[in-house]
Image (tube, rainbow, N blue to C red; front, top):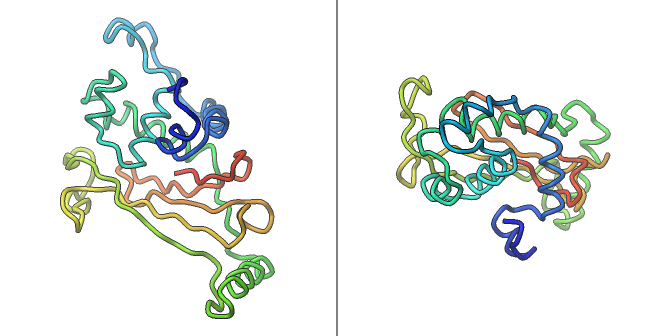
Length: 207
């Protein structure tokens, strides 16, 4: 992946190389140290953090977990495992970022509302955040993973985890420099994933 052209890299991971490296540094302290000897004995080498982040971002972008396992040499049985690749990485992202939306700051909310009002020529009055969502395809969860597996049935067929994202009219995010925020709802590990990405170099959303 280091040899990818910048445009292709951003298309694949939805962040540029500098932001990827910055995100990698941010989540590194929150990743539990694995038993490297055990990992080498079982698979030949441990799954490095860089690969974990790359796989997670590609999965959030819609890639098949089977294709990712094949491309990165990961056992399919470890992808969704609680101590495997996906969930520990998402939890590290959760821990590395905090909520970046001032729900109880009237002055900030009025500033956000004015941004939408001005941007829409007066059509959007009282709007402080624009939301959108997507369904990230996944396999059917096992009963030991979630309490209600049927909750992951997707209206377009199959199973999915719903990712919600919100943004303001400001290209740099919220008035105090905080960017838009995103939320991976219905997380299999009951994780909220609402996060702030204010110090990421390109202002990109963090899943």
